Length: 457
Image 1 (spheres, rainbow, N blue to C red):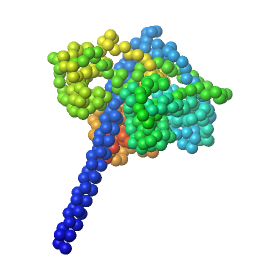
Image 2 (cartoon, rainbow, N blue to C red; image 1 turned 135 degrees about the vertical axis):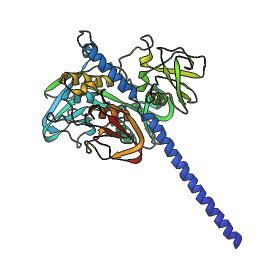
Image 3 (spheres, rainbow, N blue to C red; image 1 turned 90 degrees about the vertical axis):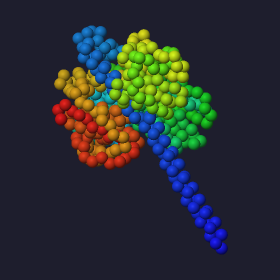
């Protein structure tokens, strides 16, 4: 009897250990997924924001020239027409998905910002308050309903999903910006549509795996992969017409790409940057090239990296343009575009995402010489970031958080508002809450919180 009892106790003990081991493994798996998601999203646009500031400065520098950068950009490309669909009306959530909101914009800036979002085709706009709601509508013109003081505007662009290939994936041909292990095709596509830079997906109908991609061209390149499908968003002009009042917003089909990769230049030959002109800052392990670049952008003084196949990533501060590499064949080297001479950096203009943002800058400048938006708030500093903390309370507009794609974008939004001194970004929902005060910080693994030092505060 005693031996039987002993056996039962041993079995129970083993079961408990196995259960805890399983839970620990599951927790480790979740932590790894979260780490990778952070790698995809963690301030990937810091270099991009710096690039926009350089563009804004150039706009100011050559304002008086007939061949100025602004004049050249306005002459480029085709025009996208905005139709005024209705007055004293809104589209509302009943008819089209809401994919973002800004409480204070001019009409032209509202339209231009919409064009900078891959899935935005219409807006609800209030000219008295500047409130702007961005919407993704499947048809043109969109349906609407009565709402005093508001206007409905829409582009003559329809969005539709096109299956590009079967038994294939886009893979490394386009930047990966997110992943979900279990979705239906329609959920995979609809989630992509709510992400600012998502233009395509790799989808596995057998498992429900969905990888969100930002591609610079249509159709995207792809490679063979059994069981997977490639889908991409196609923009097309509809065959239906409307007699609504129109206004033309000039844009272009060729602009500078805005992904992290296009702000970096890969040096031509194999070799690291262990040279006198490139001071070692620090090294990190287990990084992809994109993650290494993103982390460099968050590291003071870092303007170059070298990385090997194992993911050993070294941050460096180079003091010369186009630095000479060392002879270590195991490493590839990348430098920020600001370190490259024209021979290494031809800024090819080929993505309509950036022009919308550029137009927003230009239009904000035109709307008012005193409009602070045109300066991109260079007098403030929004670089203090706390990972895994949620700043409760102090929201400037709790009911309408902005929909952005990274902590850096959330910080940049806070920069634009004179009263904003803090912000919180949720990596799962992409929502950004701007705040006029810091209250209490609570632990939350899916959030980033930051503060902004304003010169007037």
